[in-house]
Length: 396
Image 1 (cartoon, rainbow, N blue to C red):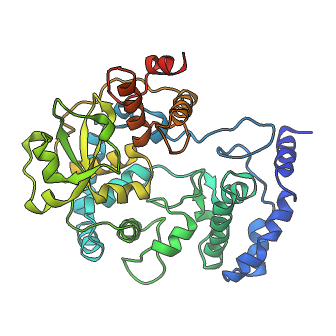
Image 2 (cartoon, rainbow, N blue to C red; image 1 turned 180 degrees about the vertical axis):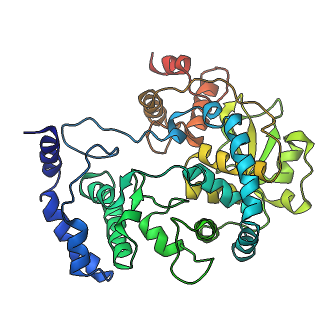
Image 3 (tube, rainbow, N blue to C red; image 1 turned 90 degrees about the vertical axis):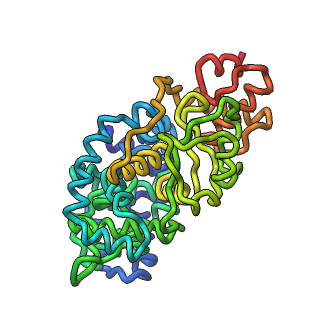
């Protein structure tokens, strides 16, 4: 038996029915979305699961978590200045090239052009990164034996609907998670957010830059983007900074943060309207790195992609396209602990009643704040950052 067949047998054991029976079981739901029998049969003909994908749940096989750079790289590595210089320079050229479309996008959705350009840059490097997976295979595999089967089953159905509605199979190239197009939409998101901005026909997120950028803007608008408000403000930290307060539930008006000693980077003068905005404090590297005040639009971007580093990349790149300088405070050379080590820390914090979120090995805002609380309780230097030394202290 080949390795592929062995893996397929393992996958089949994860469910009651074999893969092809599972595919056939989805037809009634696809039909309810308007997918014909002919379209369905052509789509699944010869379709086999791709068991090399991450995030699958196959008995007897070690879990392979998706190695997304947003979750495994340090801030300093992910947010490299050389990348911002290159992408901002091209972004400025594209802003001029698509000036009319971007102005219309901002009028209709309230999202500035540099923001959607930055999303395009982060998702596909302005269209240079072509996704290599067959979207139907990805979505069918994840629906069959992934960790989020119901979620991906729904996306598989909408991918079939795309075919029914005339999108060529050759266009359905995706990431390992099934997202497609210049700004990476899932099939269901295409139907929720795709916008046709540049002429007659259906939205084309694969080839039409105006359509792709408008679709990203509509998604942000529908998630709550606030017109005319900042996404974040880099600040200089006071000596009395308490990094355990750097989590979303601890909010103050931006003006109150400034009164407490937080000063806008580069001596930036804020608009009077911004001072009344509620914002939380973000310390991506704990107390030793840059600090940011994050109002509503930060969390709208975070709803677009749950990684703080993704949001910082997109937001900062948008600022750079608009002419802003680099981060004022340099990123440190802090090491990134392995996912398993951060999970161990989270488990210990849960046991101590200091952490009440997911144990996922990602040192997000709530994990960092809980680490700071642990440091306070144990008389340690409070910097809210996971280190090998702190792990040793927690597990000794």
